[in-house]
Length: 561
Image 1 (cartoon, one colour):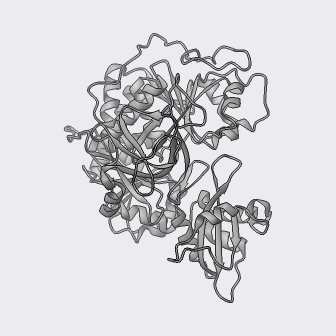
Image 2 (spheres, one colour):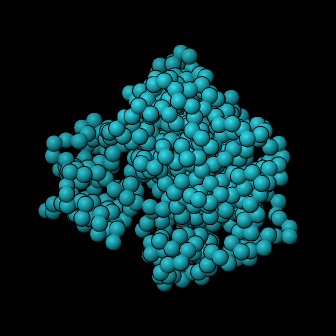
Image 3 (cartoon, one colour):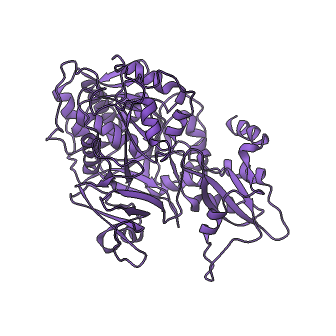
């Protein structure tokens, strides 16, 4: 499709002015017969089997082709022993096979456990074991990391290797992807209902290990319907999906809305600022889901008189820096729509195309009840900070539980309201504004980071007595990670050595940027670390910054080798 029409600089598009022509496709309502992820695909394949849905590089899949290949994968997985209720981990980057596995597992009533491809070491082992994964589908590039922990995961019996590569020794049986993808569709499909789990998605732990949110099938369709409605997607749209498929955003806020609308979806291997606008123009993309750090990256490119000459009509996301919101819209001629959400609850707050307030998360959506409370549990009024509490108005539209963590589930649902752990305020017109995280999770470049898990790895360093991870201001509008450490008596901490230690034990995005060495951490009389004091101090003159140390480049090269 061709790019949208040229407009004068400074114009912001209307809700539909940048939609390409429909090619005769109807504007379809959400399928009334779909109650599951795979049911939605089947409904679209029944209605429009020969229309293109998915584009990846030079390849494309129609609705019908995607369904047939997913059914073959489902048959292949069933032949490997996968059945309803089994937890199957997926560790791969953005590629069509990820979607084939996702739909196939849904068809079998099995449960997807998507793993961040940056995870390694104890955290990777923990997630595989905590979710009781019996099978893992992975790209060969990750098998080295998997081999380091596979022997410690008693439930894991088989690994499906997606592509050819070195095969490190693992106790599990290894099956080639071709054996799975060439399976025969089942003669009889199991019954899968809207309350059945479709995924266990791990969220950042704050005062403990990461928790696996059990998400029902109806959650996926409900969230997809909310986004499709807010963005007014229809069959004329083309969504550019460059966020990682192992996150809920790419699955439930991009893929499912595209299916609900009967739109096309371009799947990119990853977000690339240099490739973004070219890909948008090449496919005539009309919409894109962003995370806050993406907007400053796109903004930082040298301005051009043709910046607004693109086909995008809308970008939806969260965390847009307030000072960039309106200038970004003016420069690129695109409308930004911001909301608030979490894996556990979906999207309870959002602006809309016609009703927006820059800097806000929007207003309460009709699918939810929300309230703000103070630390004593009393509801607060307008312009008063409070913790956001949420509960759904529809069954199976939020998480069912934290998998195998009943105490954490009960704690999160205290008083039959889900406690988000985030402070917000609401203005007199009902618009909400995010203020801060009550819990200690960090967010860096679109990734949620558990301060608990960062601290645990840091504390394994032989020279560290204790540590505290905090977020400090970033030029990209989210957090940079600072680790404040106290050395063991008679020892000193070399910041570069500490970060080299971290890089071998955690995902790259979790590795702190700053190291601050202290004689003691600020604490309350009950020995709780007062992290607000560390955050307030921020980056001090004596803080170590790995980005300013040329030796860090060599560390990264050594790790990549």
